[in-house]
Picture (cartoon, rainbow, N blue to C red):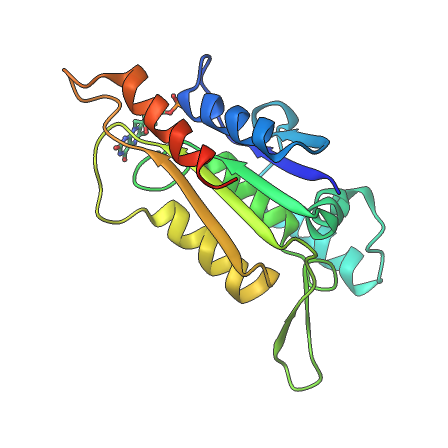
Length: 186
Ligand SMILES: Cc1cc2nc3c(=O)[nH]c(=O)nc-3n(C[C@H](O)[C@H](O)[C@H](O)COP(=O)(O)O)c2cc1C
């Protein structure tokens, strides 16, 4: 039982990271971290896409290019930590998603062309913080849609702290409130 921690927090002293670490402590299981700021995955240009397509066509799903996809598919629980950037999340995370969404690893198609999810995780936690307040979080909404449509992860939980950049707000108190929200989950 290993938690896969996908860390898309870019800033030093990231508030999102503080909340994710609190959650991980509560989960009390070994953690494998993928720090997206450090692994420097490239977005798919033509060359990379052609390489990927050729590997898939050859059935070479054990190629190192797909190692993150296997790691994601095999994790028993997943924590994603991503601050809100431009109503969504940092592009580092979108690039990671493009790398892991490989047919035959995280999902496959049935004979009738239907998506069959292949991920083992029961729960995915999405931890985020934001400077203001928003009705819609396209970042979480997108991750939730992927979990339900492609990955087969039904239990998708949101942990968030809002209004961290609003002058006059008590940031430590807001973070403590989010930690208390995490505590109620266990
Ligand atoms: C590039 C960038 C884009 C941002 N876009 C938004 C936004 O759309 N809405 C918002 O409320 N805050 C936005 N913020 C503020 C961050 O969401 C907020 O400061 C958050 O707490 C940062 O998390 P961190 O401390 O983990 O880095 C943005 C910050 C950055 C650096």
